[in-house]
Length: 529
Image 1: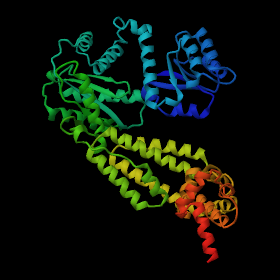
Image 2: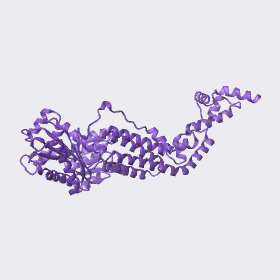
Image 3: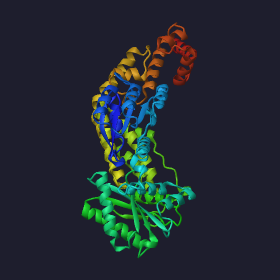
Image 4: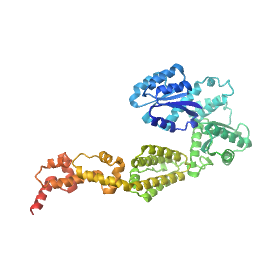
């Protein structure tokens, strides 16, 4: 495990970095955290990490000073800096001091951070003295071999693929090959323990085949892959392939208390074709979302991708969901969500399910933020939601989870509705009294201690019209009364809170059907008659 120290003065950012990725899965561990460069330097001198992640602008000691001090004693330590766009000048100075990677905080996503850390980890392995002597040191040779096999899966250039195969002494191997991708569903072991047990399961199951029939190695995400040399197997065929893969799944479940799924690619007869086979195996493993986990899934047999030209676009209407939630339309919302998941089930596109689920999750947490006064509890709720959703294995489980989560949200809204109605009454009274002043949605919602979006939706539900429609109507009604006097039209606009004469006339006519002057004439006629 490579050690990582995180240095960032804002706790919430440190928490986000620490919780956004699975460190064990990357072969990393967070060995310490610090709020400024001075704390970090003491921490580093006590237990030097392999990788330092640091902000630039911090109190007491900033990131530039920290990097300068670290370089004096630890010239080979890998450093990743985080900054805002406006700090780029500082970032350039940090880069001159030998920073490995540079990331913009506002753009940083979990996958970006994972890829950055994996690149840094690879550079550590490549630069280590051990890796330079891999051909002469027998106990490190497997690490070199696994790294080269991973390159073989990722490489698409035929010449380069052939070179890698020759470096692995695979040039005399009889093709075709299959790629098997073994993903965890759930287990209690660490990444290293899990990988060791999967290797053991492969070895046990392979006793029925000839020697040297397969190679096992992890990918960059820590999932185990198997290269299966079909020509070396005593028995080969899709049914035998599925039986073997299913045997690995059962062995892990029965002997190791591990739940796994195996994706099996189509065969490839070229080294450069291994990249496509690797993608097929991963896609097949993801198909567990639609047919269930703990099984072997063959690409092209159990999983046949839907042609892209036949796939209809699936969209989530956030506006529609928003309206149904605030209208407490539980049944309608449930039917809408079920329809979305029926479309996703028909499409059988794992990545699309992930995208739609993320959209729904963001909408769900946003709606909670609008009705909750304690933002710390919302932060915990978001973390809880992400953890729960990441453990769901099938699309049916995801559908059930979202239906329940949205139902709980609506139930909560109904619970707080009665108490918050008093705030709407208070806001309406305030508008009736101070309509001539400048009143914004932000100011009126703050007055009654409700979030802006929640207030806007609650106001419309309670009053039957939006805040702006209500405010404008009150102002025009007051103006109608004043137009029966001798005051000038422009002055009346000022008096009711609409100082722009043109805009006042336009709004007045839109609501009454008459211009202010036409209304005044008619009012006088009505009065005289």
